[in-house]
Image: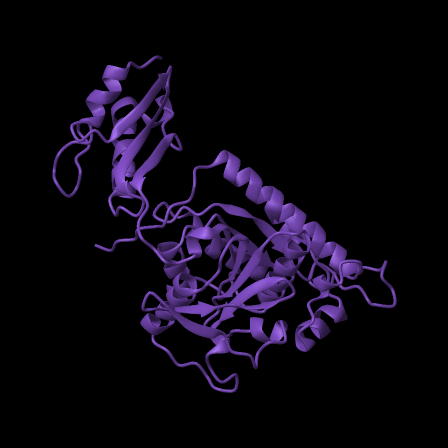
Length: 367
């Protein structure tokens, strides 16, 4: 089956701009239209790069073309580019962050924060510019794990706007709500206060040029997760689970959030933490105290990438308590394990960026 340019333009004339009610062809928004058999691609032109109509118009184009010709008969998804005539004025440096990776888990207690910190350190060890955002508002642990819980970020004014300067440790920039509250006090916030804090750290942080930002999300799904996808474009999510079925069952719920049509954040892969126990004095021994290969088998069954299997070793716990991540010692057994994990994550991000279109900030509406 082969389509013509005229057929495509006829359908696109039915896509109306939501603000001025003129069609996008009349407005001259469709450029560089290419039709090759069933593959169709074009560029949508907007006045500024943060135009709120970008995603609604792009979505309308896809839906109308698929409705007209059949979803299985036309290749349009991922083939609509966006071009802005000028960039919006934004003093936030979050736009300089190349890849934002959310680390999530279905339940607490699986070592998600420990994995996040050591992954960030291992990524920095490759020479990449790395940041970590502690988005676990109610249980911020990153400051302690980096031994900077008593430090406070500098706040300065730029163009009458407050800018937060992230702290740096082990070659990574970091912000956490833990820097702004007493570590002994319980954080009793309504959802709006928590989400506001996340937005401030994201958009008012002086991040600068960053290759990878690791975001340590709270367990489960909720306001913080939705705030993240509505505030910044996530390149992908990484799931962390222990081998037990009860933990894997909760991973399914977390993944379903990322996979929802309205969110659609790619899952880069899954990490099996506490995969086995290895005593320090018997480094070659493995004791599968939580079951063997539970996450690995789940990944194989569901077509997920297994990014790594990490053991329980006493030094991981001790490193977290002392604020010395095990990944900082790149020559240790665990340092090498996290280095391999970092390599796998870099490769997964590369494949995602090559095969999928750039992630857009999610617009979630309720009826």
